[in-house]
Image (tube, rainbow, N blue to C red; front, side, top):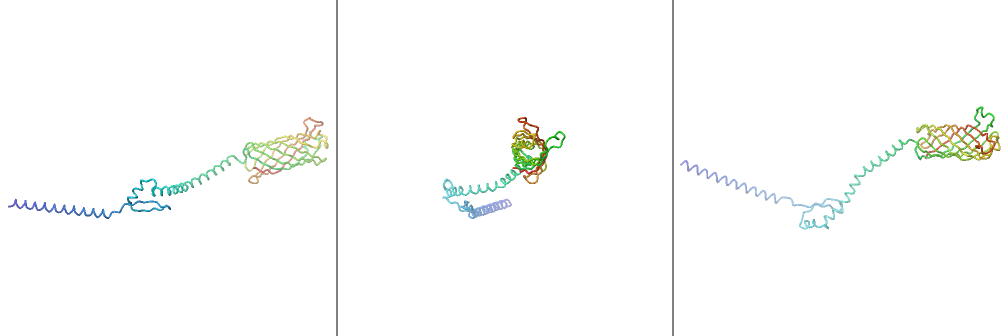
Length: 279
């Protein structure tokens, strides 16, 4: 009796377990079908002519068009993408180009500063006036004391930061003891003792040839053509961006180098003051 009842209960439990498993399987299948039915349909995202994004369901025609090189999708991408790529590239490059330009300007400014105010190839033009008379030493006591005024245009070019070669064209007027004149080109060289931007002292030396009537006025000179070796010291002071006040004193000699007689010569000092512009 007990054995039959145990077998009966076992069979009953097996039936109940089978029924529960079947119910779970049916429920899972129904939920899967509902999820499939409610799933979003696949869509194709495209780009419009103005760059906007557009979504549309994928159809069989669209699937075929994707494989064709002349499809609207490919044409749209070819028309719009390069424009945005170029614009993005230009926008990205603009700050870099601006920074590069600023660095270039800074580099040029630094190079100019490192060169100093004077440098190879720099030019200048100017003019100075001069007053002079006989050098008051015993050796020249027996020579005529000629008072001389000069107006001297000047053109120079720097060989480097401390050397300058220049041409001058002095216009010379003698006022005492007799009136006379002289003019002619002079080649001068300057050696600057400093490349200071505000104040630059220098030594200068040169020689010229002049045509004069001093030979008719003063007994120390023979002939109309005279040589004019000269040298001195001076300085230039910056008064504007490219303008300098130039001043100095020179020894100024006139003689004919023995080409005519007499050839005693004149020896004067000359005090110079002028203006020069760099360019």
